[in-house]
Length: 75
Image (spheres, rainbow, N blue to C red):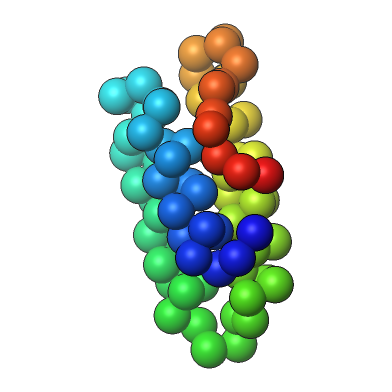
């Protein structure tokens, strides 16, 4: 996954989340924006962090809905 793909991946995951989860998802996107602005984050770090964020989003969605999240995100 490239850095550009990693920037888009959480947005694809968020698109499928129920409306009541969007505020939680927004917090994760703010975190990703902070990582993107940090000059010490190289592409590999950014992709790894993105994969962790996506896993967290899936977990939060599963806990809230009891339904396994569906995603078209490239992993």
